[in-house]
Length: 97
Image 1 (cartoon, rainbow, N blue to C red):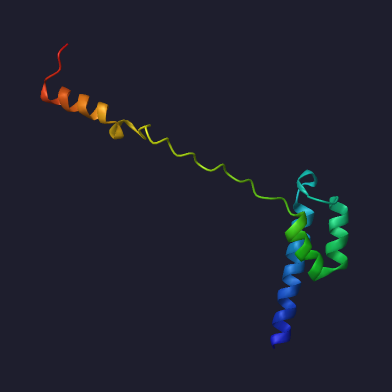
Image 2 (image 1 turned 180 degrees about the vertical axis):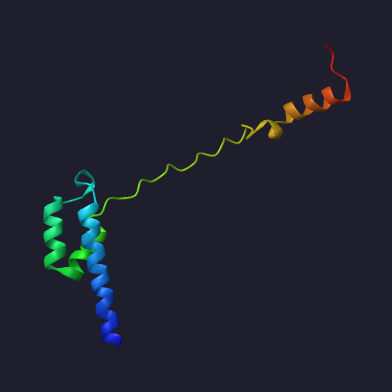
């Protein structure tokens, strides 16, 4: 029973890898041309699929790290002490216009 489950898992991985190679746009494939990747995955099922996942599959686009504001730069108007002081003064009616 365990052998059947392992065999089914390997078959599923091979089919997934083959489907992934076939559906990946050719300009996004890395290292070798797409037809060669198909041949590798078909002829060497387990190893070809692992190599495809590691070396041929397109990389996911990475988002840039967010740049935190500098130490003297407020994050928003409610974090700016001058703004809060001015707002408090206007709310009390001390505004001289």
